[in-house]
Image 1 (cartoon, rainbow, N blue to C red):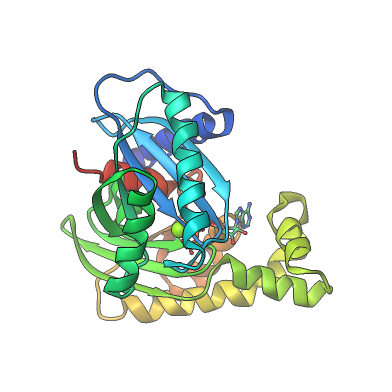
Image 2: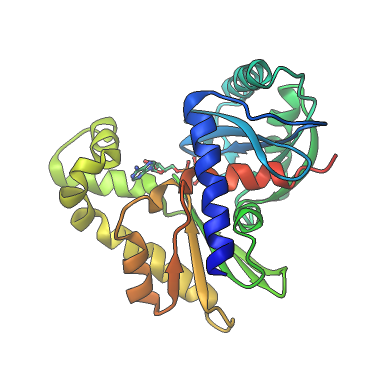
Length: 275
Ligand SMILES: Nc1ncnc2c1ncn2[C@@H]1O[C@H](COP(=O)(O)OP(=O)(O)OP(=O)(O)O)[C@@H](O)[C@H]1O
Ligand SMILES: [Mg+2]
Protein backbone atom coordinates (compact mmCIF):
# COMPACT_ATOMS: atom_id res chain seq x y z
CA UNK A 1 0.00 0.00 0.00
CA UNK A 2 2.95 2.34 0.75
CA UNK A 3 4.10 1.95 -2.85
CA UNK A 4 0.59 2.50 -4.18
CA UNK A 5 0.27 5.66 -2.12
CA UNK A 6 3.63 6.96 -3.37
CA UNK A 7 2.45 6.36 -6.96
CA UNK A 8 -0.89 8.01 -6.27
CA UNK A 9 0.92 11.03 -4.78
CA UNK A 10 3.09 11.33 -7.89
CA UNK A 11 -0.03 11.31 -10.08
CA UNK A 12 -1.68 13.94 -7.89
CA UNK A 13 1.37 16.22 -7.80
CA UNK A 14 1.62 15.96 -11.56
CA UNK A 15 -2.08 16.85 -11.93
CA UNK A 16 -1.64 19.78 -9.49
CA UNK A 17 1.19 21.18 -11.63
CA UNK A 18 -0.93 20.85 -14.78
CA UNK A 19 -3.84 22.70 -13.12
CA UNK A 20 -1.66 25.43 -11.57
CA UNK A 21 0.25 26.06 -14.78
CA UNK A 22 -2.72 25.66 -17.15
CA UNK A 23 -0.80 23.01 -19.09
CA UNK A 24 -1.71 19.84 -20.93
CA UNK A 25 0.31 16.64 -20.91
CA UNK A 26 0.68 14.64 -24.12
CA UNK A 27 -2.19 12.28 -24.74
CA UNK A 28 -3.77 10.06 -27.35
CA UNK A 29 -7.38 9.12 -27.95
CA UNK A 30 -10.54 10.44 -26.36
CA UNK A 31 -10.33 12.25 -23.05
CA UNK A 32 -12.31 11.26 -19.94
CA UNK A 33 -13.75 14.33 -18.23
CA UNK A 34 -15.06 14.90 -14.70
CA UNK A 35 -16.98 17.92 -13.39
CA UNK A 36 -16.87 18.52 -9.62
CA UNK A 37 -19.56 21.01 -8.60
CA UNK A 38 -18.35 21.79 -5.09
CA UNK A 39 -19.58 24.20 -2.45
CA UNK A 40 -16.33 26.17 -2.58
CA UNK A 41 -14.75 25.20 -5.91
CA UNK A 42 -15.80 24.00 -9.34
CA UNK A 43 -13.18 21.83 -10.99
CA UNK A 44 -13.09 20.07 -14.37
CA UNK A 45 -10.48 17.35 -14.77
CA UNK A 46 -9.45 15.42 -17.87
CA UNK A 47 -7.56 12.12 -18.09
CA UNK A 48 -6.63 9.83 -20.96
CA UNK A 49 -8.24 6.39 -21.34
CA UNK A 50 -5.61 4.92 -18.97
CA UNK A 51 -6.62 7.41 -16.24
CA UNK A 52 -3.45 9.48 -16.60
CA UNK A 53 -4.12 13.17 -15.82
CA UNK A 54 -4.05 15.34 -18.93
CA UNK A 55 -5.26 18.78 -17.78
CA UNK A 56 -7.59 20.50 -15.34
CA UNK A 57 -9.21 23.84 -14.61
CA UNK A 58 -10.68 25.22 -11.41
CA UNK A 59 -12.38 28.30 -10.00
CA UNK A 60 -13.85 29.38 -6.70
CA UNK A 61 -17.62 29.40 -6.74
CA UNK A 62 -20.68 29.66 -4.50
CA UNK A 63 -23.38 28.44 -6.91
CA UNK A 64 -23.69 25.00 -5.30
CA UNK A 65 -24.15 24.31 -1.60
CA UNK A 66 -23.67 20.76 -0.35
CA UNK A 67 -24.83 19.24 -3.62
CA UNK A 68 -27.75 21.65 -4.01
CA UNK A 69 -27.60 24.11 -6.90
CA UNK A 70 -28.50 27.54 -5.51
CA UNK A 71 -27.84 29.59 -8.67
CA UNK A 72 -28.61 27.45 -11.72
CA UNK A 73 -27.88 30.04 -14.42
CA UNK A 74 -24.54 31.02 -12.92
CA UNK A 75 -23.63 27.36 -12.33
CA UNK A 76 -24.18 26.53 -16.04
CA UNK A 77 -22.26 29.64 -17.10
CA UNK A 78 -19.33 28.78 -14.83
CA UNK A 79 -19.12 25.20 -16.10
CA UNK A 80 -19.38 26.46 -19.72
CA UNK A 81 -16.51 28.92 -19.13
CA UNK A 82 -14.34 26.26 -17.50
CA UNK A 83 -15.18 23.80 -20.31
CA UNK A 84 -14.09 26.38 -22.91
CA UNK A 85 -10.81 26.94 -21.02
CA UNK A 86 -10.15 23.21 -20.83
CA UNK A 87 -10.94 22.79 -24.54
CA UNK A 88 -8.42 25.48 -25.33
CA UNK A 89 -5.76 23.88 -23.13
CA UNK A 90 -6.32 20.37 -24.53
CA UNK A 91 -6.97 21.52 -28.10
CA UNK A 92 -10.02 19.32 -28.40
CA UNK A 93 -13.78 19.54 -28.13
CA UNK A 94 -15.05 17.89 -24.96
CA UNK A 95 -18.42 16.24 -25.42
CA UNK A 96 -19.13 14.05 -22.41
CA UNK A 97 -18.36 14.20 -18.70
CA UNK A 98 -19.03 12.43 -15.43
CA UNK A 99 -20.09 14.32 -12.35
CA UNK A 100 -20.49 13.58 -8.64
CA UNK A 101 -22.79 14.21 -5.70
CA UNK A 102 -22.42 14.07 -1.95
CA UNK A 103 -23.74 10.65 -0.86
CA UNK A 104 -27.38 10.57 0.21
CA UNK A 105 -28.75 13.69 -1.49
CA UNK A 106 -32.27 13.27 -2.84
CA UNK A 107 -33.01 12.20 -6.41
CA UNK A 108 -34.33 15.62 -7.47
CA UNK A 109 -31.06 17.31 -6.52
CA UNK A 110 -29.05 14.68 -8.38
CA UNK A 111 -31.08 15.57 -11.46
CA UNK A 112 -30.33 19.30 -11.04
CA UNK A 113 -26.59 18.60 -10.77
CA UNK A 114 -26.77 16.54 -13.99
CA UNK A 115 -28.77 19.31 -15.66
CA UNK A 116 -26.03 21.84 -14.89
CA UNK A 117 -23.47 19.58 -16.57
CA UNK A 118 -25.70 18.91 -19.58
CA UNK A 119 -26.67 22.61 -19.67
CA UNK A 120 -22.97 23.28 -20.30
CA UNK A 121 -23.23 21.00 -23.36
CA UNK A 122 -21.77 17.82 -21.94
CA UNK A 123 -23.45 14.41 -22.28
CA UNK A 124 -23.51 13.16 -18.70
CA UNK A 125 -21.63 9.86 -18.79
CA UNK A 126 -21.87 8.93 -15.10
CA UNK A 127 -22.95 10.31 -11.71
CA UNK A 128 -21.10 8.89 -8.70
CA UNK A 129 -20.61 9.63 -5.00
CA UNK A 130 -17.77 12.08 -4.28
CA UNK A 131 -15.80 9.93 -1.81
CA UNK A 132 -16.16 6.94 -4.14
CA UNK A 133 -14.56 9.03 -6.89
CA UNK A 134 -11.70 9.87 -4.52
CA UNK A 135 -11.25 6.16 -3.72
CA UNK A 136 -10.55 5.46 -7.41
CA UNK A 137 -7.54 7.81 -7.33
CA UNK A 138 -6.20 6.37 -4.08
CA UNK A 139 -6.72 2.88 -5.47
CA UNK A 140 -7.60 1.41 -2.08
CA UNK A 141 -9.76 -1.70 -1.99
CA UNK A 142 -10.57 -1.53 1.72
CA UNK A 143 -10.80 1.18 4.37
CA UNK A 144 -12.63 4.49 4.44
CA UNK A 145 -12.25 7.47 2.13
CA UNK A 146 -13.38 10.74 3.67
CA UNK A 147 -13.97 13.86 1.54
CA UNK A 148 -13.92 17.01 3.66
CA UNK A 149 -15.00 19.77 1.32
CA UNK A 150 -16.31 23.28 1.75
CA UNK A 151 -19.75 22.25 2.94
CA UNK A 152 -19.81 18.63 3.98
CA UNK A 153 -17.88 15.65 5.28
CA UNK A 154 -18.62 12.56 3.18
CA UNK A 155 -17.45 8.98 3.52
CA UNK A 156 -17.26 5.84 1.43
CA UNK A 157 -16.35 2.59 3.18
CA UNK A 158 -14.79 -0.05 0.94
CA UNK A 159 -14.31 -3.78 1.36
CA UNK A 160 -12.71 -6.08 -1.22
CA UNK A 161 -12.83 -3.30 -3.81
CA UNK A 162 -16.56 -2.64 -3.34
CA UNK A 163 -18.24 0.36 -1.74
CA UNK A 164 -20.30 -1.03 1.14
CA UNK A 165 -21.43 2.23 2.78
CA UNK A 166 -21.65 5.93 1.94
CA UNK A 167 -22.71 8.86 4.13
CA UNK A 168 -22.45 12.64 4.28
CA UNK A 169 -23.05 15.36 6.87
CA UNK A 170 -22.96 19.14 6.68
CA UNK A 171 -19.66 20.09 8.34
CA UNK A 172 -16.82 21.37 6.12
CA UNK A 173 -14.31 24.14 5.55
CA UNK A 174 -17.06 26.77 5.61
CA UNK A 175 -17.75 25.89 9.26
CA UNK A 176 -14.03 26.29 10.02
CA UNK A 177 -14.08 29.77 8.47
CA UNK A 178 -17.18 30.73 10.47
CA UNK A 179 -15.49 29.64 13.72
CA UNK A 180 -12.32 31.53 12.81
CA UNK A 181 -14.10 34.72 11.68
CA UNK A 182 -16.16 34.71 14.88
CA UNK A 183 -13.08 34.26 17.07
CA UNK A 184 -10.99 37.00 15.43
CA UNK A 185 -13.89 39.39 14.65
CA UNK A 186 -13.32 39.11 10.88
CA UNK A 187 -15.79 39.01 7.99
CA UNK A 188 -16.31 35.59 6.39
CA UNK A 189 -14.17 36.61 3.39
CA UNK A 190 -11.34 37.86 5.64
CA UNK A 191 -11.57 34.64 7.68
CA UNK A 192 -11.37 32.53 4.50
CA UNK A 193 -8.23 34.35 3.27
CA UNK A 194 -6.62 34.13 6.71
CA UNK A 195 -7.48 30.44 7.03
CA UNK A 196 -5.98 29.24 3.76
CA UNK A 197 -2.70 31.10 4.16
CA UNK A 198 -0.19 28.51 5.46
CA UNK A 199 1.76 31.15 7.43
CA UNK A 200 -1.25 31.63 9.74
CA UNK A 201 -1.64 27.95 10.55
CA UNK A 202 -0.37 28.33 14.14
CA UNK A 203 -3.07 30.92 14.86
CA UNK A 204 -5.74 29.12 12.88
CA UNK A 205 -5.56 25.47 13.82
CA UNK A 206 -6.23 25.76 17.60
CA UNK A 207 -9.37 27.81 16.82
CA UNK A 208 -10.76 25.42 14.21
CA UNK A 209 -9.67 22.22 16.00
CA UNK A 210 -13.17 21.68 17.52
CA UNK A 211 -14.58 21.65 13.97
CA UNK A 212 -12.01 18.99 12.99
CA UNK A 213 -13.06 17.01 16.09
CA UNK A 214 -16.70 17.34 15.02
CA UNK A 215 -15.73 15.91 11.59
CA UNK A 216 -13.84 13.12 13.34
CA UNK A 217 -16.89 12.34 15.49
CA UNK A 218 -19.07 12.13 12.34
CA UNK A 219 -16.62 9.63 10.86
CA UNK A 220 -16.24 7.69 14.12
CA UNK A 221 -20.02 7.17 14.18
CA UNK A 222 -20.16 6.15 10.53
CA UNK A 223 -17.42 3.51 10.78
CA UNK A 224 -18.84 1.83 13.89
CA UNK A 225 -19.61 -1.77 13.04
CA UNK A 226 -17.31 -1.75 10.00
CA UNK A 227 -13.83 -3.17 9.84
CA UNK A 228 -11.87 -0.01 8.95
CA UNK A 229 -8.11 -0.09 9.52
CA UNK A 230 -7.20 3.02 7.51
CA UNK A 231 -8.90 6.32 6.76
CA UNK A 232 -7.85 8.38 3.72
CA UNK A 233 -8.74 12.05 4.01
CA UNK A 234 -9.15 14.27 0.94
CA UNK A 235 -10.84 17.62 0.13
CA UNK A 236 -9.71 21.18 0.73
CA UNK A 237 -10.61 21.34 4.41
CA UNK A 238 -8.04 18.68 5.36
CA UNK A 239 -5.11 20.79 4.07
CA UNK A 240 -3.94 21.59 7.62
CA UNK A 241 -0.75 19.83 8.67
CA UNK A 242 -2.21 18.45 11.91
CA UNK A 243 -5.59 17.47 10.45
CA UNK A 244 -4.79 13.74 10.15
CA UNK A 245 -3.25 13.66 13.66
CA UNK A 246 -6.51 14.93 15.17
CA UNK A 247 -8.49 12.28 13.25
CA UNK A 248 -6.07 9.56 14.30
CA UNK A 249 -6.19 10.55 17.98
CA UNK A 250 -9.95 11.04 18.06
CA UNK A 251 -10.95 7.94 16.09
CA UNK A 252 -8.01 5.66 16.89
CA UNK A 253 -7.59 4.59 13.25
CA UNK A 254 -4.53 5.29 11.06
CA UNK A 255 -5.31 8.34 8.92
CA UNK A 256 -3.51 9.14 5.67
CA UNK A 257 -3.70 12.33 3.61
CA UNK A 258 -2.65 12.04 -0.05
CA UNK A 259 -0.90 14.89 -1.90
CA UNK A 260 -2.99 17.74 -3.41
CA UNK A 261 -6.11 16.86 -1.38
CA UNK A 262 -8.22 19.48 -3.21
CA UNK A 263 -7.80 17.67 -6.51
CA UNK A 264 -8.36 14.04 -5.55
CA UNK A 265 -12.16 13.98 -5.97
CA UNK A 266 -12.22 15.94 -9.27
CA UNK A 267 -9.56 13.65 -10.76
CA UNK A 268 -11.48 10.58 -9.55
CA UNK A 269 -14.67 11.85 -11.21
CA UNK A 270 -12.86 12.03 -14.57
CA UNK A 271 -11.49 8.51 -14.03
CA UNK A 272 -15.07 7.31 -13.57
CA UNK A 273 -16.35 8.81 -16.81
CA UNK A 274 -17.79 6.10 -19.04
CA UNK A 275 -17.25 6.53 -22.73
N1 LIG B 1 -4.81 25.59 2.11
C1 LIG B 1 -5.98 25.42 2.71
N2 LIG B 1 -6.06 25.33 4.06
C2 LIG B 1 -7.23 25.15 4.67
N3 LIG B 1 -8.41 25.06 4.04
C3 LIG B 1 -8.39 25.13 2.70
C4 LIG B 1 -7.18 25.32 1.96
N4 LIG B 1 -7.48 25.36 0.64
C5 LIG B 1 -8.80 25.21 0.56
N5 LIG B 1 -9.36 25.08 1.79
C6 LIG B 1 -10.77 24.93 2.12
O1 LIG B 1 -11.28 23.80 1.48
C7 LIG B 1 -12.65 24.00 1.17
C8 LIG B 1 -12.87 23.65 -0.28
O2 LIG B 1 -12.51 22.34 -0.49
P1 LIG B 1 -13.09 21.51 -1.73
O3 LIG B 1 -12.74 22.20 -2.99
O4 LIG B 1 -12.66 20.11 -1.54
O5 LIG B 1 -14.64 21.68 -1.43
P2 LIG B 1 -15.87 21.58 -2.41
O6 LIG B 1 -15.71 20.35 -3.23
O7 LIG B 1 -16.01 22.86 -3.13
O8 LIG B 1 -17.07 21.43 -1.36
P3 LIG B 1 -18.10 20.22 -1.08
O9 LIG B 1 -17.42 18.96 -1.54
O10 LIG B 1 -18.33 20.22 0.40
O11 LIG B 1 -19.32 20.56 -1.83
C9 LIG B 1 -12.98 25.46 1.47
O12 LIG B 1 -13.67 25.56 2.69
C10 LIG B 1 -11.59 26.10 1.58
O13 LIG B 1 -11.57 27.16 2.50
MG1 LIG C 1 -16.10 18.39 -2.93
